Length: 256
Ligand SMILES: CC(C)(COP(=O)(O)OP(=O)(O)OC[C@H]1O[C@@H](n2cnc3c(N)ncnc32)[C@H](O)[C@@H]1OP(=O)(O)O)[C@@H](O)C(=O)NCCC(=O)NCCS
Image (cartoon, helix red, strand yellow):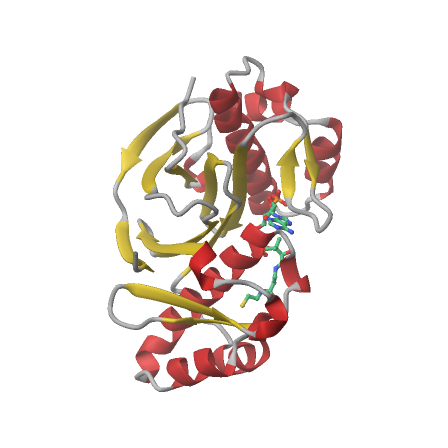
């Protein structure tokens, strides 16, 4: 059984591209619910099919271990009003999933709502267009004031933090993206501000940003209800096989 204390935030990472063992993949397929199997069937591209299968296996394998449930296939999932996946049993366990080309990330913790987002840093974003559309004026100005060669990384820094916040809230695109801003006050800090429209409070949030192996930006948002001192634990591995602890570089986090 896996234990997560009240202040533990566990992040599970999988590079699904290295999973080729057909017996293991068959075991993953056996874990799918009827709806998941139908969703899997509808996916056309091999990469999407593999990503989907491994993500389901990761979520089921890991959550079953925290919940001390022997059969990961028996876990049932529903979703909140705005579509955030959740467990259909009485539990304080919280989780959130993100995937991008090459990486699946799962965040698990007790009690506090959590959101995670990962993106591949070398993918060239349509910066001017997306910044104008999705970022606040402060975020856009800070990005465009940087040397051009830093724009793409800063774009993903902001994008993943905004996504992680939306995913912790569970509201997706219903939350207007220009009504909250992330500002980096120095080399290692993250500040957030909300417009009055959002009725949110920066004191209720903690954010972390990591750079993981392979050049991915990972952002994590936690709705911190009790002001505790969180501890990040990061593991990498293969569902139903083995995981090991890793220490990716912390790029920045909320100053405490
Ligand atoms: C789900 C959503 C919140 C994020 O999607 P995404 O970044 O494309 O994809 P990710 O891989 O990071 O996350 C997908 C996972 O989030 C989870 N998810 C789905 N809806 C969610 C919600 N409302 N809240 C939290 N998590 C959600 C699911 O587990 C999903 O994976 P699954 O379908 O395999 O189970 C998306 O619906 C969305 O609304 N994105 C906003 C898009 C946008 O305009 N972003 C601008 C940022 S500046």
